[in-house]
Amino acid sequence: MDSASNTPSPGLRQKLIIAASAAALLLAGLGLSTLHERTASEMQARKNATALAFEKAPEQWLAHPREASEFERALQAKDVAAVGVSGGLVLYTDRSGKFFSTRLIDCGLGCKNEIGSRLGELSVAQGFALTDIDVDARTSGQRLFQSLERAANVLGPILLLLLVAAPLIYLQMRGGLGQRTRLAEKPRTRFDDVIGADEAKKALRRVAAFMKDPKQYAAVGAKAPRGVLLDGPPGTGKTLLAKALAGECGASFISVDGSYFSSMFYGAGIGKVKELFKKARESAPCIIFIDEIDGIGKRSNGKEAGGGGGEQEQNRIINRLLVEMDGFAALENVVVVGATNHVDNVDEAMRRPGRFDLIVRTALPTVPEREQLFGLYLGQTKSAPGIDVASIARTAAGMSPADIANCVNRAAAYAAEAGEALVSQERVYQSLETHQLGGEVSNTKNLITPETLRRIAFHESGHALVAHVLEAGSVERVSIEPRGPALGVTYVARANEEPLYGERELRGRLAMMLAGREAELIAFGNASSGAADDLKRASELATNMVGSLGFGKTFGLLSMAGVPRELIGPDVQKSVLDEARALLESAQAECRRVLEEKRDRLDRLTEMLLGQETVSGAPLKRVLAGDTV
Ligand code: ADP
Image (cartoon, rainbow, N blue to C red; front, side, top):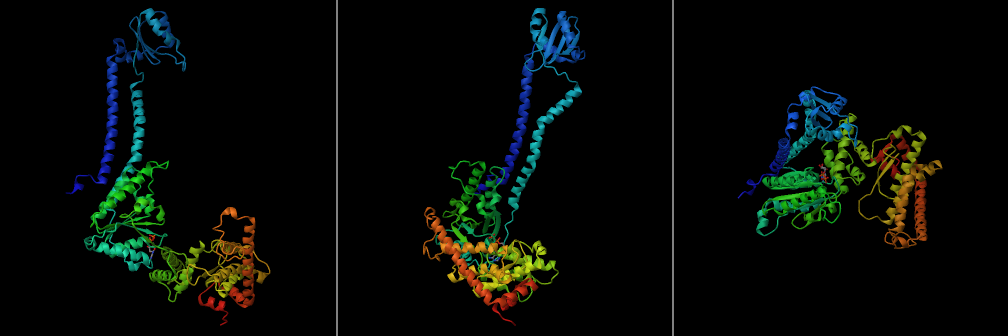
């Protein structure tokens, strides 16, 4: 039996709640006014005849206003037959049956008007009727105006509330509609479209096999996968992989992100979860992709203080998600894929068996993968022939596939801006530099004097030459165009990105870092502030080599990282610094030797840079190798 037919859908239920709230508001309003009317009529019934006479036609008294002093005189003359008091307003009838009204002066808080306070005693002494009345002294025009004003005062906030709430309710209802119309697409992406990520693809292929033929797995009692967590840095293809998984098994693909479930209306987030799973079941086989799944938050265990309503709502959303996943029937064929950059932030309960129990990691691409990625994205543009994709890929260390896609796209935009028909290698490098150095060529360029430019050219040439000769890495490109904070840049890529650094490579890197300053000293006899960053990085590396990497002599294999702080006294600190300094000085000597020995190459590269601003590719390789042709 279809139990769903008896239960309103979450969207419908939400609307019912909204309608019920509006009705309750209306009923509360009606209830209040009925109560008010009933109280008024009860009070009326208890009033005495004199009061009723005053209240029936107060205009007759109000039409003859008198000064308070005249009322006082009438009292003194014992000429008063009946008095009705309504606040400061007094209606009175004299002994001849004439009607008058007056106003007693309000003498302030805590002060009683003298006549007013004596009225009771006078009424007993003189035998006139005295009663409280409820009379409105305003004209009918004033009354109408003031009732409108009062109505506005009462209704205003309600109207305001409605005005504010209506769009929200509308949006919320649209959100509900949005859930229903959130399309389950059928992606055409395949695993082959995803470059690299071999481990991830291997794991997901198993899930795909399951989804393609769930019966075969069920027949041998294998449990269907329910949740997969993709964990990796941004832009490493988590979404792409999830789409490829759907594409491989012809499944539908519904994509939301963690924040999709949060709502300003209590309970609406749970409705969204239910709606999402309902839609997925209808579209099965289906992949529900939840990007930034940690955005749903971690469940609190209720022990920590400060868990407000929002936190409870988060707990309820996570619980609902888990209930939905636990409720997958064996052959339902819906798999939830969550993506996160911080798997530790994903609630532990979510990672238990039967839930998101398969964790698949994505990583930044290796050099060959970057080469493929540049090839792929350049292939989608009109690129110039002969681009050295391998060199670009080496230079693009640390970039994610998404960064690479962006970089190629920006290169194409540069080419278009310059009116060029093809995307050249130079444009790709230009775009790479923008990415890596955090900016376009800066305005500093206009401030640089020819002499400073010459210094920068020597500085960069020094880095490049020493890196090449001491094999600190492969020198890909040298530029003296200022970008971001850098006045010039030398790209030195590691030949391969193996995780270990040998001592020779580390010493070579130290020398390379110091080479800019050393080249300045050789060429000009003095150094500049331009080496500040180089010195900082060299000092970091040298102290690390001595203190933690085991290249120091005094401490041998002792690593400062493992020694308790209290045991590291000033003598130890001094020794580390002395040794690090000795390392730097030996690197400096090595660097000077190379630069002096290859001075001709240094001068030649400097001149090339001054002429072209940027040198890369084969001409760079030739000058560094000392080829004169
Ligand atoms: P994530 O979900 O990990 O943040 P995406 O899958 O959204 O990353 O990747 C963003 C874009 O980067 C994709 O649309 C695609 O163009 C590109 N991309 C990411 N990873 C790869 C990959 N492994 N192969 C090819 N392109 C990729």
